[in-house]
Image (cartoon, rainbow, N blue to C red):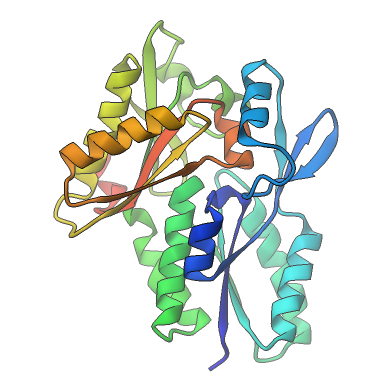
Length: 295
């Protein structure tokens, strides 16, 4: 059986330590500011988190691109030339077209590599929810699964990723076209903080409102507590858009409310950050299927 490489993209917001631990690569998208494209590095080589989020706080729009076709071609050829198969864990197709670009490039490239496999999988998630799907893929690989078997094992459990995010308002997400149903749900009422989740087909959907920031932090933990009910030792990832102190506060609430859980804190990366805006906080974990929500 051919070795398998697991690769994701800039939307996964997977820090270097986890990428190294699970032996996962990623392909870069780009942020765009003043017409200039900059690689969306998850290691922040080109600008710091504070620089990005202060730009957004100042009212400047930062846009994004998908993974360029050239990036796919470069990575796919590089790994196939080494004799590896590839499993690409992509951002939700409802948020990015990268999974479709990757699949198209894979179809073309595989004509020159008989017997090789590239699986392009829509994770139905973004941010650290996408990272969790990639980690599952790496665990399956480490169990000796082939690329095709990894794909078959992942598809039924993508809806077991629970994602709950609170933002100050939905303006950035709405402007980026990354959230559905926002107009009817939220009218910029003073002090009301929307909470969104990723639904069963990968849409970001507002499902609740909380009055005030602290209540919104408590609410995302309460939703996650239900999401991991019955799960032994859940691993809960906390992602923040330049509000680390509040992320640490969420970790403390988790410690109180879900004492059997292990928490991990990291930044919301450049691509998701440009879409969601500064000061967003989300919690992500494998748990019970999100199909329990009838939204």
